[in-house]
Amino acid sequence: MAIAKRDIVAGPPELKGHPLADLEQLFLERGERKYRAQQVYDALYIHRFDDVAGMHVLPQQLRETLQSDYRTSSVRLQTVQQSEDGTKKFLFELHDGRAVESVLIPSEMREADGVPRRLTLCVSTQVGCNLGCVFCATASLKLTRNLTAGEIVDQFLQAQKHSDKPITNIVFMGMGEPMNNYDAVMRATQIFNDQRTKMVAPRRTTLSTAGVIPGIIRMADEGQIIKLAVSLHATTQDVRAELMPIAKKYTLPELIEALEYYYRATRKSVTYEYILFDGINDSIDDVRRLGKLARRMPTKINVIPFHDIDFTQPQGFAKTLKPSPSERFEWFLQKLREEDVQVLVRSSSGVDIDAACGQLAFSTEQAA
Ligand code: SF4
Image 1 (tube, protein in one colour):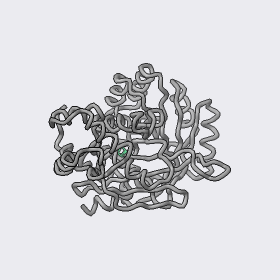
Image 2 (image 1 turned 90 degrees about the vertical axis):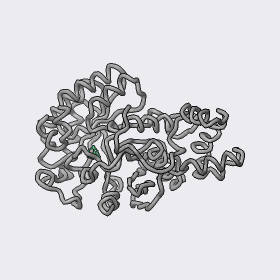
Image 3 (image 1 turned 45 degrees about the horizontal axis):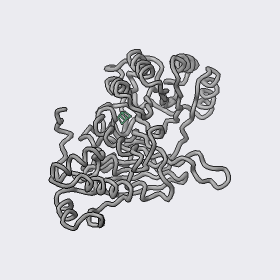
């Protein structure tokens, strides 16, 4: 695959982000023994070293050459914000001065002691995004470049250091469209899902797309076993195209057809993400159309409240977007449940720290 200019990251190559077989190949090409690659892999992802100097299992000479030839840390933590509800938002600096963020969200608290059963890390896959969804802060940042697999994996490794509980779930739903950085996302996924690393199981790993059809087809054809979520946000082509310009390229009927293909190939259900906007997509007709779409194959619908934060100074249609009032939100949920479909509600985690994609990196990238 040709390397696009935005994929090129200057500086020493990364040690992180190579699945074991690739790392072994790399070591063989360097004239090293294959088992040394396994030792480095274990040191990075099982023992979670950030510095080769601490990998005493390796001979000193190898440590020194690796240290001079490679970058062991792919992202550097700049700030952590913690919300009242326990959500943590991380701002990471990349080696070229760019910034991305990840959000760690606790959920399903145990009644007895309030400890979360689930700890989900939402990771970024690109610096900025060029899909231009009108409700999204990241869309204000033009796409600068794709993240490497190492930068994706390192978001997890660094975020884990700031939690005393293991991260249980990963969702590719931070900055960027993961399907537009497919190869790096899947390389990172190989490491996350590798049983040796004990990071996160495939059934607890979700790729969320704005509806990039070639990526959905590729996941189906490759038999990828991670979960798929799709930002639907509208039940008609016209409204969807207004909210998400990508829908002009990949229309709603084509998207549904691709998802049915995906289901036939993988037998895996799909989650529809649906942000509720006042007067835009919250009518009884929307309920019925959404129910009808969802019943075409096994699906879950994740209904999400919109956060009315206008620091991106939205223009035109974006300016008119408001959250559905809470009574309307509850009414929508109730009506949707009557449609005999599986409905989930995403809580408003981290509202007090603006834990939506792109909102922290926005100011950093604007300044870059
Ligand atoms: S919602 Fe996702 S795909 Fe849409 S602009 Fe934001 S980051 Fe890109």
